[in-house]
Image (cartoon, rainbow, N blue to C red; front, side, top):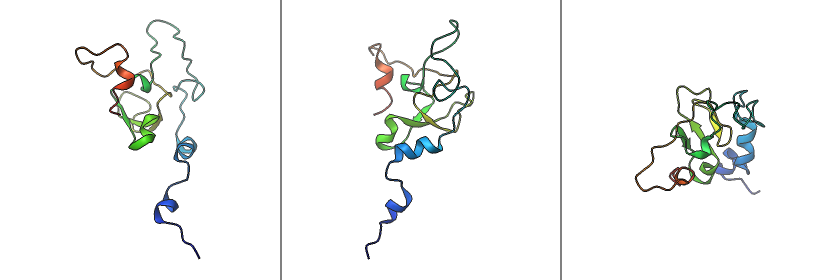
Length: 112
């Protein structure tokens, strides 16, 4: 009788789909995850999400970190929560730009 390895018992075959089942969705998240629209209602309404290089978005280890992380911003309703990079929040803060970085620096600057 073949036995499964310990790793296969503790990790679902498709971790991305598993994370979608367990991630908490908040009304303040961007649509379709929450109720917030991407189009700015006024100039004070930020439309950036974690994929734009939020300094508080801590990517998960490995390939999952391209899409998933944890918010560490104490001002965010997502603080301490598993977060898909496009869920977004109003407390987005860009990472500091290094001298000579191009305008597209943020999407590539998440340490990957």
